[in-house]
Image (cartoon, rainbow, N blue to C red; front, top):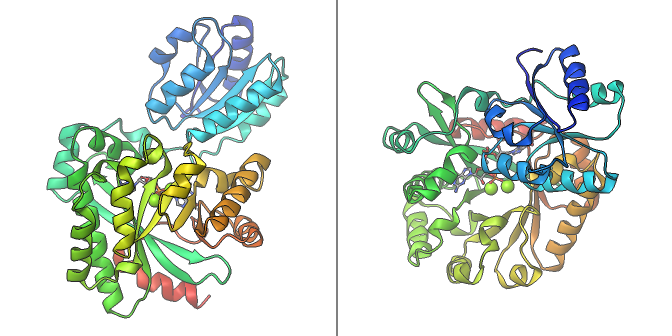
Length: 390
Ligand code: C2E
Ligand code: MG
Ligand code: MG
């Protein structure tokens, strides 16, 4: 286990040493600091686990959370604190909302066995291999990736929850770097967005995905295609027209194209995108609000925006069996969407129990590793045939 890097941050030196000893006893590669400002120097992108005291002089745990979020950290967190459970739970929720995984929370003082129990939950299989191998890609590398066809699309199947029939696929961007291997989209899309390169990526994605849908639709495969749109391209007033034209040229059915925009991207001001969103709908495209539950869109914004579908973020779906609050968020999202005349899609269906629960709750559609991971285009039809004959 000494390939797993663990960082302990606690200003109580004795306690920090106790925690480090337990972790070392379990074979982790442990670094330790009782000085919270040292955290950023000890932290590296391949840190796997961070055990953090929420309250320290100088820097608090919440600030460190923000640091991890801004650095797209894949580390799992364990929170500890001598304050009440309520604070620990709030911090856990906050981390969850930012997509940071939390292994557990421990109220001080705790026994070695309690810490061992939480640490034993760390799943090496799900440790972020891809992330370990590389750091954030540079602008030049992204530029080269687009120019040299290192980026491509894969398609994750989506099913109707009630009868498990395949209803569509979501196009997901992939990048195989010649030396660094797979680089996840969450690593390079934000960089491309900040540096004016997202329109090149978007153009590649929409062209490729719609062309592929055109091929499938013309061959009698009547399913739909979801495409992720960066908010940065939602200011091009001609976009709905260009997209419709492209679909027609490719023989793709416009009503089978779903444009996905994330809730967070719409948070700032939905009014500035309303124009484009409304015109997309008027042209017959479907429109989904993605990663619902991770942003803070107001109900008023939701009612005003012309979404046809609401996608519940995978963070809540994945944990809905074991975490009551996640389940509540899923239930409320389903109710809300239905009341507003929208369909609901759950992402992150990782096992059969989640699917069953979603079915009982009346969720319409879903995708997730239990159904299938994203597949290369040439494998999709074969996969659907196998799935349908199960
Ligand atoms: P998203 O649109 O919410 O896409 C779903 C993500 O959840 C995908 O991650 C998918 O592989 C993952 N996923 C699906 N089912 C499961 C599951 O059961 N368990 C787990 N753990 N994960 C599951 P991926 O491909 O890494 O994409 C991450 C995000 O990057 C996407 O989230 C989307 O926001 C963005 N993205 C991907 N492709 C594009 C693109 O072409 N353009 C833009 N603008 N953004 C993209
Ligand atoms: Mg999406
Ligand atoms: Mg999503």
